Amino acid sequence: MTTPGPAIEDLLRELAPQVLGTLVRRYGRFDAAEDATQEALLRAAQRWPAEGVPDNPRAWLVTVAVRRLLDEIRAAASRRRREAAVLAATPQSELLARPADADPDVDRDDSLRLLFLCCHPALSVPSQIALTLRAVGGLTTAQIAAAFLVPEATMAQRISRAKRAVAGSGLPFAMPAGEAFAERLRSVLHVLYLIFNEGYTSSDGTELTVPHLCAEAIRLTRWLRDLLPDEAEVGGLLALMLLTDARRPARIGPDGVLVPLDEQDRSRWDRQRIAEGVALLHEVLPRGEVGPYQVQAAIAAVHDEAETMAATDWPQILGLYDLLEAIAPNPMVTLNRAVARAMVYGPAAGLELLATLEPDPRMARHHRFFATRAHLRELAGDREGALADYREAARRAVSLPERRHLTVRATRLAGPADGVISDSSPASRPGPACPSAPGCAGG
Image (cartoon, rainbow, N blue to C red; front, side, top):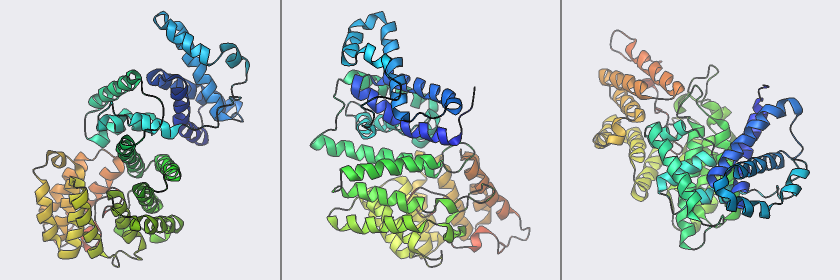
């Protein structure tokens, strides 16, 4: 079998949610539609490298997926009535007679409707997010489990239950209205945020970033903003993504290692994206109630607009984290607020705040808690405690680039025999040592 190249792989990843959305809109069978979509993607991966990409690749995939779906319906005797309804909606003779890339309905992209369907009131919020990450973001079950800090088997069961709930819900494939729209929009924004996070710092594997996930999250958020220009948090999320993604080219060294914020070559930051993100932030902030994505975008903007790490306005960042914790408290916000507090008031103040997270079982097993505490202990001169925390953080990190980065930190710290931190060590520089999520102090 011919292996598809990166260009074809990227195209298939982009088209997958669009094809699935089309099938769900037409036939309403989420689980069967996903199976058919995956079959079409597999056939494309096998044939396109040798035969060439069709003139209308989305239409080709839709037609192949529909044929697969009809074959599955025909093969199941217990679903004869369903087969009759589907075949009546799309005459089989017409479907099989025309070329695979000649679907007249192919220009309609249903990815956003698919997003809202996945974030559906029949599901719990975690299940909504998990299903959307699987169906629209294209993440593996393992990657989603890492994002939720749960075992992979647990996440697989959650996704299967979510698919069954959607399949049996009977709700139309349409955008919700009224209060339901506002509720579903919050879940959709959270999903897009998680997809971007997975692209910005991959939860597993050998690569630090997964650029196509960042690009897909930005693409869908741009589209959502075009549809909902008056929703300030949609604009805030897009600004956050742009301002954060602008730094991505400088986060990876020539040997593939992670480069923390204080060591990044800022000339490699994407100034066009920074300018777009700042302009968007200035547009949405004056509109009224400020939401968490707008605040995180403001934090990212302060980082991006500083010419050097030393020139960063840490008091402003700390004030923004204070606001963020007031409107959307969670342990990761506190973690990054501790770093900002340390940069303003000294490492002891940061460690004092960080200690409030120690009883939280979610943080007790998270590598970023130990990495942050290691960095602050290092700044405070506690070499032994910092070394132990760096090693524990490296042991718990599931991403190979993050594990290597933390191991290097520990090795550098353990190096000097006289107990004096050398000028080349992380503690001699002012920047945070731990990578972190968009808008945070470390990334």
